[in-house]
Image (tube, rainbow over all chains, first blue to last red; front, side, top):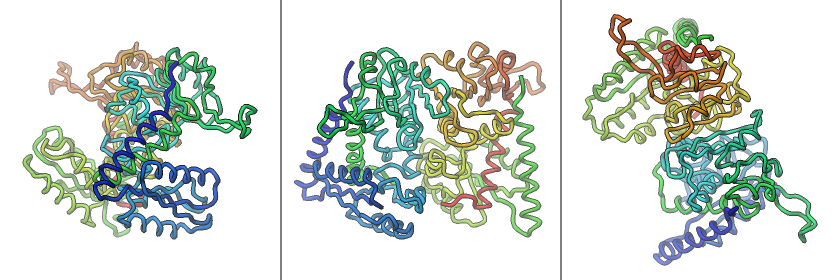
Length: 294
Length: 294
C-alpha cells in the first residue's frame, strides 16, 4: 500500500504558487492575486473554513479579504455585496461560503457571481464548461482529486472508477471529469447514490474507488478490490483517547482495514482536505492571470 | 418484449402542443411560438434535419424561419446573425445547426447564443443548470429518452443504467439526468466510452441499457441482461432489398436478436428519433412561455 499524500503534494504546489507570485508578480511590480470571501452568519464550520482559506492565501503571498455579514442579511443586500465584488477590479476571485441561511436562495446567489470570478467553480457556466471540456474553473474537491491522481501518475483511461455519493460539489463533478476525453479522464465511471441497492458489490468492482458519502468508516476491505486505488473524501471527528484534544479525524473509509488490500489510499487527515484547499489557490491564481475567457 | 413506441408518444405530445397553441395562444389573440434555425453550408444531413424541424413546427402550429448562409460565412458574420436573433423579440428560440464549417469555433458560437433562446440546451449555462438540477432547456435526445421512459412508467430509481457512448449531446447529458435526484433519475449510472475494455460484460449488467455509440447493430443478445430495457439512439442507413428505396434504417442494436431477451426496446426508426424531434418543440414552447428565468 502506498499513501496518496495530499499534504505533501499540496505543499509542493503551494511552494510553486508562492514562487510564481514572488518572481512573476511582486518582483515585476504587479500586485498579488486577491481572493475575497463572503461569510453570512456564525456557523462555526464555515468560520473555520474561511479562516483556513485566509491562512492559505497568506502562505502563498495572496491578498485575502473577508466580508462578514449577520445571519439575518437580506438576499437583496447579499446580491448587492456580490455586485460590488463583481465590479471591483482589485478582487480577482471570490467565494460565497456555503451553506447560506435558509431565507436566501443559494442558486440565485451563485448565478449572480461573475463567472470570471467564480473560483469555487459553482456557477452553471463553469459547471457547463466542465461538462463540455471548455477551460474553466473546476470545483475544488474534484480538481484536488484529479491533481492528486495525476501527481502519482495513476492511469485512469480504461479503468473502472466507482464513485459513492453524487453531491454537486464532489461526486457528480468528479464523475464528469473522470469520464471526459482528457488526460486524467477516459475512465468508465459508475456513479452511485443512496438508492443504489448493491453498493458493496459495485464498490468491489472498482479499479479506482472514490468515497464521498459522509458515512463514517463505511467502506471496509470486503468492499474493495485487491490493489484498487482508494480516495476518501469524508471527514468526521470522533472521540479519541490517543490525542490531547480528545478527538481525532477519520474518513468514509475504514483506513486500517482497507489499507492492507489496496494499492494506493488517501489518509484522513492529509489526503483530499489539503488538495481541496490548494485547488482554490490554483483557481485564484488562474483568475488573477485571466486564464479563461468569458 | 414491449415496444417503446417513440412515434406514438411523440404524436400524442405533438397533439397536446398543437391544442395548447390553438386554445391558449391563437384563440387568445397571442402569436404562436416561433423557432428559428441557422444553417451554414450545404451538408445534406443538416439540410434534412432543418427541413424536418420546419415540418414539425408547421404540424403543431409554430412559426419557423430558416436563415441559410454559404459554407464560407465568416465567424464574425455568424456571430452577427446570432446577435440579431438574440435581440429579435419575435424569435422565441433558435438553433444553430451543427456541425459548422471547420473555420468556425463551435464553442464560441454556442456561448454567443442567449441562454434564454438556446432551445438546443447546448449553452454551458443550460448544461450547468441541468447538472445542478435548476430548471433549464434539456438537450433534445436525452430529454426525449427521459420522456419516453416516463411515458411507459419505467422505474429508474435504484436501477443500474449503463450508457454506451459519452457524447456531449447524448451519453454524457443522459448520464447526468438519470443520476440526478429527480423523478426519472436516482439511478446508478455507468458511463462507458471507447476506452472501456469490457464493454460487453458491463452492458450485460444493465437494467436499462442506452446505446449511443454510432456502431451499426453492435449490441447483440449476449450483451443484454434478460428483461432489460433497451434504448437505441443509433441510426444507420443500410442497403435493403425489402424496400422500394433500396435501403432501410437500423440502429446500434441488433433489434431482432435483442428483442427476444429484453422487456422493452425502442425500434429504429420510430423510437428515439421522433422523441428527439418533439423535445425541440417542447423546448420552444417553454421558450415562448418564458418558463425559465435567466
